[in-house]
Every structure is written in C-alpha cells, then in structure tokens.
Length: 320
Image 1 (tube, one colour):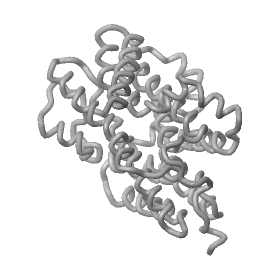
Image 2 (tube, rainbow, N blue to C red; image 1 turned 90 degrees about the horizontal axis):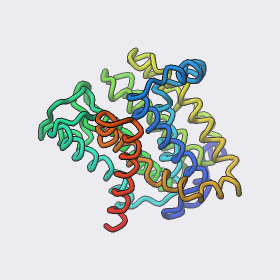
Image 3 (cartoon, rainbow, N blue to C red; image 1 turned 60 degrees about the horizontal axis):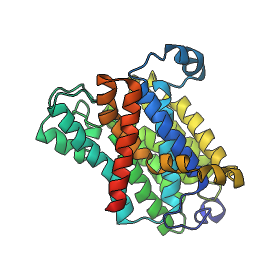
C-alpha cells in the first residue's frame, strides 16, 4: 500500500511562490481563453479553424484548451502552495467584480457575453452568479459564463490542502474522481456535468505534484470523466473535450517534468509573469468589458479594454 500511495507532494509547500511550469501554463492559458472566447466570437476565424482546430480536434477556438491549462495549473498549485483565506478571496474576487460589472453593463443596455443572451437582469440573477449557484443550474442566467472556472480553482485549493493533511495524499484526487463520476452519472444537468468533467483536469494537475504509483491510475481515470460526461450529456460531445484534455494534460505534464533554467527565465519575463498572475481576471473580464467594447468598437479594442481593466483591477488589489 505504501509503495502505491505514500509520500507527499513532489515539493514542499512554498507559500505564494509559483513554479515556473505553472507560470508558463497559466500565461498560455490566459492568452488562449481571450483568443478563443473574445476574439473567436467577433472575428471570422474560419481559416484558422480549417487549418488547425478541425485537424487537431480542438473546439471553441482553443478557448477550452486555455481553460484546461488554467485548471491543470490550479490543481498543481493547490498541492504545492500553502492555502490561506486571502488566497481564496483573491481567487473569488475576479468573479465578484465581473458579475457586478456585467450586471451594470446589461442594465445600461451594453452587450456582454452571457448565457442566455441578456438584455436585462435581476437582483436574484446577480445573487445566483455571485454565489456560483447559477453555474450549476441548467438555464439559469449567467453573467459570467466562465465563472465555473473559479469554482474549480477554489475546489483545487481545498482538495490540495486536504491532500497535504493526510498520510496518503493521492487518495484525495482518487476520491475526487469517484465522486465526480457519480455526480456525472446521477445528476442530469449539463452544467453540473460540465463542471464535474472539467474537474478531472484539476485532478491531473494535482497528481503531477504527487508521488506514488497510484497517480498513474488516477490521471487516466480523471481524464475518463470527460468521456463519461460526453456519453451522459450528448450536447458536450460535439466539442471533443476529452481530446482537448489529452492535449492539455500532455502540455502541462511536459512543462512540469522538463521545467529547468530556460523555463525559469521565460517565466521570469514581466509580460509572462503578468499574464500568469492575472489569468483569471483576463478570463472573466473579457466576457464583460472586452465583449462590450469589441461589439461597440472593434475586437482589437475589446482585447485592449480587457487588458486595461485587468491592469486596473490588479493595481486596486495590490493597493488593498
């Protein structure tokens, strides 16, 4: 048993230090999310889709791949960094700010990325988005369609902390897979299935930071959650998420295993580090401020507005 599941994280918890591999992956994920969901909804990318997306089997203009990279990094960081209330608050804050901004934009008549498309909102809808409840209820109005990413990042921190607290840490991601599989099988809700399936990518990130042979069984089991979700919810199958998750897992594992001096130098670049530090802000604000500006002016202006809003939010958080 010990040979299978013993030992703790590959590295001791390191406070707020982010490993170079996680920095690189989060930076790449942030770029792909903005490209996939902001640019992809405002620019004709049919040539790129024909040349890259369809042959590779990656949907949503690489946006889903970007999300998965962020989740894999969140899983890894949940194990190698010490948890704190402040860290959890900073993880949640981008969602709260985005929901409030999105509600204000809708009230002002500005178009945002919402599901379904909204020309009005309500206090109940805002509360449901702030509480993350709407992320798990089919057809509930979403003011931040990627808000479930924050939910899974918080889950990654909580389960990572639990993994460090027990003698056999790999049992936590193993149990996560079992629970997520039961949720997908028993709860007939596409949003619940989507969140549970994508949580498998969090598990893959977690096991990359653990030792023990059992992790080599847990990782493919976590990947199979996406296959199960596609079987249970046919609406998810058209996006080929399982294949995208395989790419994300390969990219993230490669970044972790082969991280060295070169990776550290690239991760130390100011632009790369900024993208990694603000990845969640970028992922969420692009659906509100970025979408509104892109619709009214130009997609490039939407990207600039997203970056500017993120920079302003980052400055405000540091002042706080």
